Length: 271
Image 1: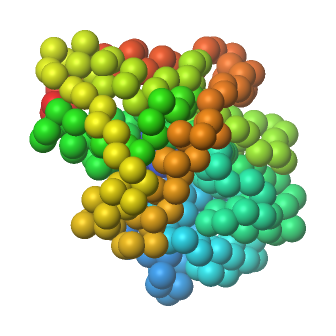
Image 2: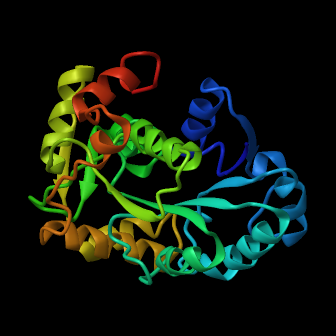
């Protein structure tokens, strides 16, 4: 078994790579750092050589990833990849926007497949996400979610489910909606980060339009608009649920936000 991991330096891809290697599997990590580029088809053949399974992270910020991903997946199938695991999102159903089109196409391309649909990452507050930078620089989390709740999920848990989907004897051939063990408001998030780090952190509520304009300073306007609309949906309750998927697939409970913040912001991560 040889597993191609696309997005291998990202939040989930780096963890999938590490967990696969720890389990003794052969891994080919692919990212722009290694010369792979979704938008350069000439980079496809090299990463596909010898691979029979693939973990797929869509190009970040692209609202139509199918345009580049479907030609790649057809080439991957022809090159010998027989199982593909796609990272999508809880808010994106099969056939829906963004990665939903790729999700819908996957079963027709591969006899073995899975789609991961995690909710919002806990690492949005500990890594290089705009929220994490805002916490570090200003002690503020800025959202348009109001009192909406989210079942934030640890990227380590997403990776654990991905590794199972990639390596299990029988392919899942389904999608997995992934959450953490509880739903939290962004006020809860700010209070937990403050309690663990000992630094003042607050959640500042803004309107979706204000959030869009704020994010458009560093993101393309269509993507900033999408993120603001997703915050509006959270405020309306679309993410206020949990699933048992992590426990059912891995055999252990998903990690709590408190545990993740303690692990990642007290062991050398900047805050």
